Image 1 (cartoon, rainbow, N blue to C red):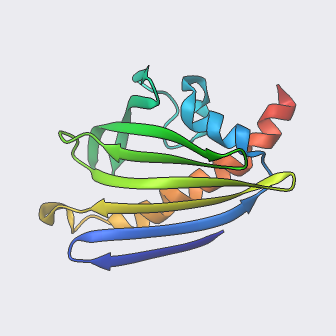
Image 2 (cartoon, rainbow, N blue to C red; image 1 turned 180 degrees about the vertical axis):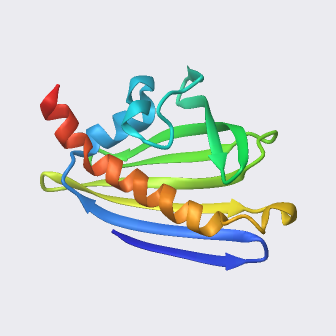
Length: 156
């Protein structure tokens, strides 16, 4: 996995890419079905999961350092071609953490090329927190969790 994090004016930019041995359909299911929350160690379980058309509204408990919060994230699944899809996501306006981004999943042979581009706004009062290292760990965990989806599917 390649991961770059940049800082500019209180905003962190993330660009991560990896070639994963998992079919694109499994990666998309992991983002669009509630029972797959357990696949992600940083989510485990949604407290809310609603689908309206192509928009999915989710809520789950999160923690950044000493802060506990409820993440309210919206996702939109955008199938572009039979071999390439995108999942756009953003936080609700009343959410403590403000971010938006896009997963791009492209089928490559038996696996997938996955890209995550994300922008995270860090409020001034929270800049003392280790937000960059937290973000790096969360993104790394998400890619590891996606990579392990193939193993979990075989085990079930």
